Length: 246
Image 1 (cartoon, rainbow, N blue to C red):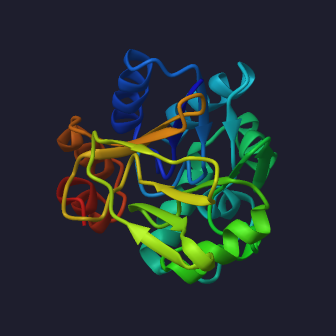
Image 2 (tube, helix red, strand yellow; image 1 turned 30 degrees about the vertical axis):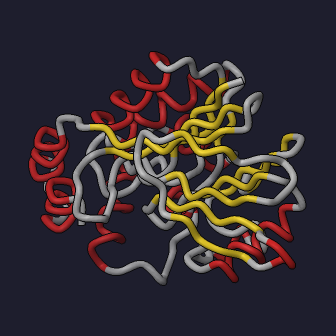
């Protein structure tokens, strides 16, 4: 089964639609949304509605820290992010707020674990940005495969000989075998706000039958997404990030 792994959409419906279309064209049979559906962008309702429809059809949907901030104010966020969250809170319907509130922070499904940040402490929103952090998350997940977002990057961590953990930077579009004799953690990338200097949306496909993973980057109308952020009166920094991928 081919599973589409999408994280950090951040209210960017243009990017989400591009990734969903690409996933369907490439045989995706199941979908997992790994948190931060909202925040930063101008289309929180459209994004949350889309994910809710997929969830009603059996997709996995996980809560991210921006999703949690809609119901629980986050003092650690900077002022621009707080402004975006407040705008998003006012823009969402009661039903969609309830949908976000009800999302789980972690889901285990057989040999797979789905979580926004680290499985070691999902509610602390720790970043998995080193091999040591990946090991902690995987050991807490207690599964062969752990899929995460939060970092807005694409990376593959794996357990090597004698338990040593390493990081591998994938090439978009290249299929990578990830056999079940070792443990893996994949950072699937950010659909709506990548930060590596490229505006292209990022998501990942995992083939659970062949045990292969492919990281993707897709061009989409990021100019339109940035324009809508400005038209909504949201912080300029958020539009700039969408335009430049930084």
